[in-house]
Image (cartoon, rainbow, N blue to C red; front, side, top):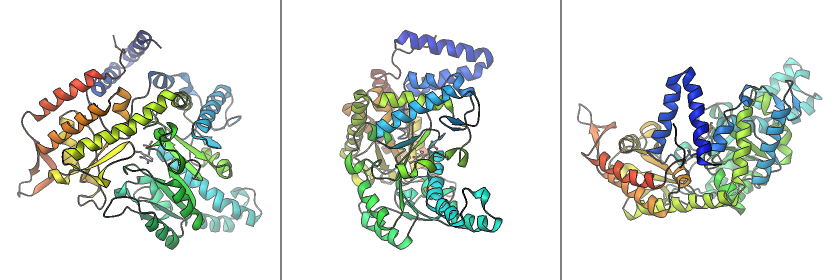
Length: 478
Ligand code: PLP
């Protein structure tokens, strides 16, 4: 697609939006300007292509389509059927999965669909058979009560938040930590690496129905064949949440034992992180779980977002190309460059490095909390997010780490030299930031003081990198 076509399409769209609510048109323009002018290192973010973005802005948004392809609770869904079938077909082929469910609105929704599908498959199905009922409506009040009790008393083993797991992997404040009896596995206190023997021992002792693998902030690859072995040993269902690294799976950087799809019973993901699609979720499943996942709507979800399913199809088509595979490899290579950039400048990284798309910087060596580091970096135009580190002394709010990912800047074209420079700039900011003091003289975990001139200096150098690799080059708004 030509630059001028994209430029005029967006300019005209903003004119239409502005004629109704000018402030939204202005905020949309400003968002592009801000994204263009900052070093985006948030590991869960990316820049979707104009084709993906445009696909979300159509009349598919207006259509209700509860149900599944060819089996809808609304009339007139023939075009939604086309879209959903194409998205699912691309997803199956891209990930080599027997079954794909592309309706989840987000990663959290995908995980909820997966949890309830596992419960439906493993608990509800056999109990209905026992009662001689086809569905729960055929149960007596008493039978339903005992089934409900059973479904609500299952066990889940997931990776703890401070080891890099996600809230939805059994963290107490999340519904996953409430609907299941949960226990968490961590990482080795010395190395920060997953200790499979410890996971196995915990699984043997706890006997969970579900083992969740996958992470938001673990900078290493996982051996999913080993995780499946552990799950099989205790008759658990292995669910892998590949939300963060789906792009590396699609791009064939993670293969064999590092590819979760052939090993997990159910794999969930978001579509907007390293996979570079629209905001959304997806569930992939082995054949035996397909029919229970297929009931995601109405089990957990309402009407699918048809415009987003269409954009997922476009993104998956992009991810099937050799260009995307080269991109995914660069994401991983660049993470190594970023890690080396920190290590050569004396910074401390959780696990001592990375072999995926993210780096977890331990900022205690700079005398800062994660919150202070995140704020100081933002002042200098570097967008990151604070993150817990294993056994974090500052808790989940202030934290002691900053998580940095390479997917977004790699999309802009950053390579080894640019990521080395990014490490230099970050070290410059953090070594010139002092923790603030409260009235009593105790260091505050929130306040900080960035040295004079640092923000200007770093922004100028970052600006040179950003100018060399413009975001959406050729897109000019009139
Ligand atoms: N799973 C993992 C591993 C994540 O990192 C995230 C989000 O950061 C999610 C699920 C939730 O995704 P969403 O924000 O789309 O609900």
